[in-house]
Figure 1 (cartoon, rainbow, N blue to C red):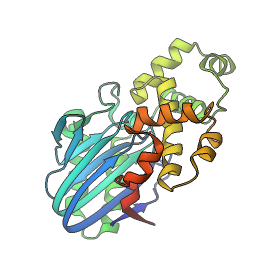
Figure 2: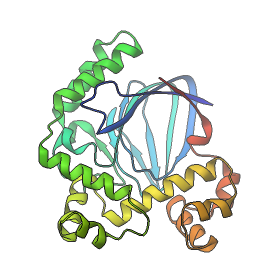
Figure 3: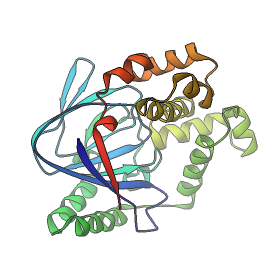
Length: 268
């Protein structure tokens, strides 16, 4: 069982963009777990051995500092030996103001952070090297992130619209949402692609799956999950779940190989 600590973000200028910062260490470990689709974008700061991702038939060796982008399909992570990792989990629109580059190129991909933003990578590397305790390293990471944050009023407005769309009622269409906020649907779709790498429709589907997937991991009743998450029926739920996880929900519950099922979380 992995022991992962999640730290709430203390700096107020970061809370609109970052969900939490996390850390875990393990000695002589042998990790090989399934990663489910998620609407988080993670920066991984690996201080130990190599991390490998398996996506379909492809095996990817990740750079020590890398981004695991928004995922619309499952993958696997493998790491052995002594492990020490810090991670930063961003909201789906949260990474953009730190790099100010369109994110369409990183979804479903593992990207070297130095190639995407050399200054952010250097600042984070310095943050970790200067810390003497986990607490001081987390503080240094927040300070390093603040140095790279470039927020304009336009950026805030676009991010707020994406947030509001993802939190809107399931019956809210893109057209009705855009009409309410006086924005053209094509403009909104273009903004969402720029900030997250996905279309609004796919981004919402990932969020719905993530909630349903968490409930499946907890071994809740499948019929209740389908109903609570507004799937048309059990068959619709099964089709969507298979699309994102690679198998139907009942088989998934029996497999028990996801990272969530094999991790214990501490919150600070």
